[in-house]
Image (cartoon, rainbow, N blue to C red; front, side):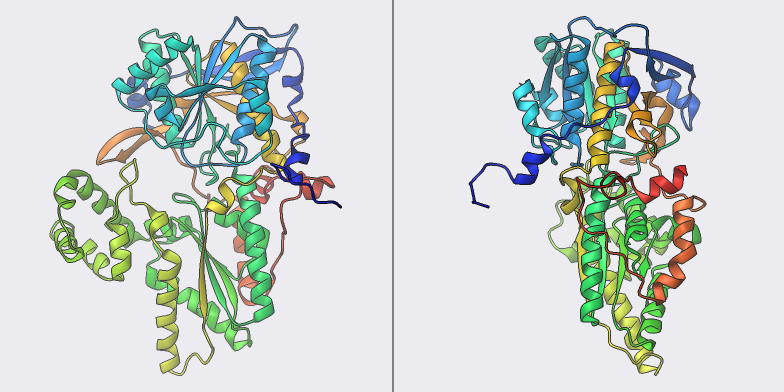
Amino acid sequence: MTYIPTSISPLQLARADYKPKLPATLNSNMAITEGEATQSIAHQKEIEEMFPHTYGLPVLTIESGPKPMQSPELNVGVILSGGQAPGGHNVIAGIFDGLKVLNNNNRLYGFLGGPSGLVDGKYIELTAPLVDEYRNTGGFDIIGSGRTKLEEQAQFDKGLQNCRELGINALVIIGGDDSNTNACVLAEYYKSINANVQVIGCPKTIDGDLKNDMIEASFGFDTACKVYSELIGNIERDALSAKKYWHFIKLMGRSASHITLECVLQTRPNYAIISEEVQEKKLTMDQIVEDIARVIKTRSDNKENFGVCLVPEGLIEFVPEVKKLISELNDLLAGKSAFFNTLETDDDKFQFVNSHISAESTKAFNSLPKEIQVQLLMDRDPHGNVQVSRIETEKLLIDMVSDKLKEWSAEGKYKGKFTALANFFGYEGRCAAPSNFDADYTYALGYTAAVIIGSGKTGYMAMVRNLTAPAEQWIAGGVPITMMMNLERRHGLMKPVIQKALVKLDGQPFKEFTKHRGEWSIKTSYIFPGPIQYFGPDEVCNASTITLELEKN
């Protein structure tokens, strides 16, 4: 083959021709049916008082209708919010195509750099040639993303002014639980003042924690887990070949261990920690470390001084004594951040912290290595929480396990060799070219959002269910965002937020893991998934996650 320089890769060129599959109801005349009134998942009275105009809405289902659905001429704005997730570009493509089916004169605008683009009035019109360039590609680079929170009335009013200048009738916010919480707040405010701007959300997060009875999966989870599982499989193959390293691999998932659990099922490592189990059993760091060391010793006794251990990013927040410490630190730094930021040395910061937290938390804080203490005191995220991705939990575990094995070696209980390597897989999976599943799912979500807008609804999240069936059998519709909300402490105050979905310890995915983990820890039972395949038999290129299959079948 003769090399010809091009601006895009051969794979990207081939993927540009891929036509995402839609539910049959979106490929025909459409009608929307309404279910019964809904209520929030918790704190019903408080949530209803906070959202009087968008609370109690019915679930929407898109069905085949007697005639084509049409809309008056609409201008719609779209915002990519928060961290990237594979398939975001296809959501936009789905919105664009859906709007054009409703009315060929409909127009789509993209606000640049995330929610701040709405407030600052930075935008571009998303035309057919531009959208076509980004179909089936990874990343959010078509308009960029950002983490600005929409929570103040001044922001709402400025955004509304910019919408009116563009003649925008509706906004679609593509984001995770916090971004969709902001969408819900924005929808309520605009409804309360009769602004005539609808707000619709789309469920995005590779962490997989934006799901419930109505939202079966957040987009990007499938692709990200396949990317991480390929890398884990490669490392497993290397460990099996070299036979001299223990690999501790931290995976994304701040609040839930869905990514870790899915990667376990895809690759069968020797050890994996599920944060929710740690919390349920109230396991201390010493107990976790001793259990890992026990597996290392047993494998060493079998002449296998190698292995792979998976660690969820948010583990440290689930260890009881550290969770209490972090909660106190979050409240302390939220209330006294101005003074804390004047402290110049680490020792001054440590002294300040120890004088303002409980004795139990002081003990936990001082038991940690200095580098972990420093990481716990770094700047908070926009929600007032510690940035757990900066905490090198995998290295902390390596150090503590190494110390435990040295202790056992001195007592004559351990005679093996322990050499460990640390990895953190995060950004590697966030902008990958979407799998066929994610390419289809995200396109269907965007198309669904357009149909909901065309029906005049607001305060909804686009929903596509029945995801383990062929795409033609998927069920599209909308779920009221208030239905997913509860109250949680943020910046020291109780705030309405979408409830995160944690790993269910009585769910089939976790049960499948516990059924086999004893065998996988001792035997070398690795599976090597390989890279994402876009062309080939269904079981290779169109399968969804193992998690979804176990949950639904």
